[in-house]
Image 1 (cartoon, each protein chain N blue to C red):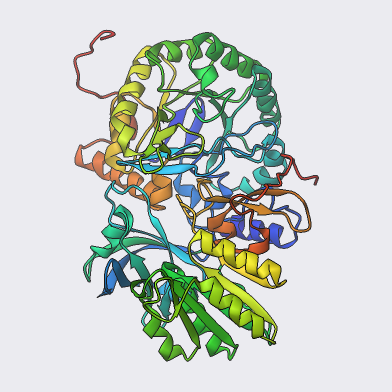
Image 2 (spheres, chains in turn green, cyan; image 1 turned 180 degrees about the vertical axis):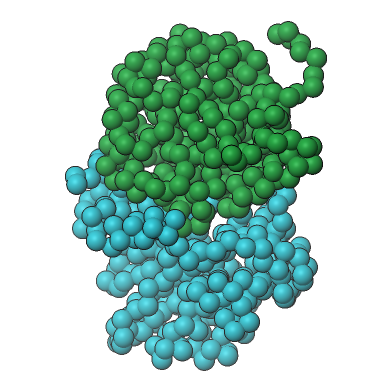
Length: 309
Length: 307
């Protein structure tokens, strides 16, 4: 048995490293440059029922150790994905999780129903946290009642593992984690991007055409680790940590605070060897610390548990 | 993995798959490796020519293709930068970039010393298509945009294709690579807006003057600032000439996954347009297809493609 193999929400992963939604296309784009067998899983770009045009340009801006983006969920729609892309991923050597979007509770449920009937989907990540769309996205993830409605509707629509992706743009992520768990979630992805604004001082306008954007990259890692830790303490279901991971040490931070797996996002734009390096680095860490399996790292944080500090 | 790649390729090849649904993937020949800097030539002002060892880029890069490059693995600046390949030396396994230090990414590149290592992925994107036999290629460069056209000049003259270069800038300091065309034996018309070198005026004015008298079939191939490319597109449209332009939007990944570098491109023979990734579907586009700033933007109804 591999020392890195883990199970999350009933999904067996070859390692705890997952490509984050929006940073890996639909997987097929990366097949020419990365061996997908090195990934525990990939999460597709977010999909609505129909194709979406996304935001005007410019859509991305660099910030200190970070990336601010407002892509606006440009995408091909779930029907084209199931018909044209999913067959290409059969036998690709990794698990395919699909990021599910909606403008309404009904749309989330409908997209989930379509994916439930599609062969080759290992689980659904529910996007209730995109900051770059006017409806849906964070409108659902920023309100506990809406979060409950979306997760419960998706739960009704599918037998696949349901993994809501929580927003960091809330005061108490533990509350949202519990609400999602009670509504039937099998695991949680923590966190999506942080809402940000970058200004072009010469033109006195936002650098992004949409105005605000979602901040990702190493800049947000300490916030992501803290929120993943809070979420993991709040629920019994597994938490998948996301935010600014660029290598093994970063991934280990999330595992140590209680995440069963992690997602690598922005680093995919920077270094196509990040999965290979991170997996090798975690194995070296296990050797260095005399551990047999990565599970022994999970939740091993030596810290006096501050009860709801 | 090879199976996945070939299945995808064959599906694209048979046109079963409508490429309007999903951008094409990065070329399977793109290779990521640590690339040592083998030569650093400082030019005047903020300019430098940097040569790196990367056998795959050296062997395969065509004019207009680019690399994504980042010095080291530091978190700042976070992203790689796209650079058009300026020259290749397949025998030595090296390629060269023309770099102007203007921001943190380019400054970090120029600060590299011989022997330092950068992360480099390439070759990427679709370069210039070689014009048909008997067509004279008119290469139009604005300042810093000269890099891919130097490589293209070499490719064309090696194949015995007629070519002519129009190389413009604000001042003589912007025409850093002018002397490198002497070895290629391609005629060059230099222009500067301040008249400090070559003809005074804009490069598109010199181009237009040449087109007034030209009698052979012509095609324009251009790289430079957006405003210059738009002017080239206007000249081409007025004279019913085909023009290829290399666009340079902010690029996040170079692989078609971040969707940061999208540009609005008209669908062939349609009134509609849609986003195309400059990285995987460009960076070279037909100028007539580009929806330029200020133009009314035909928009495709978001749609699925019937199977």
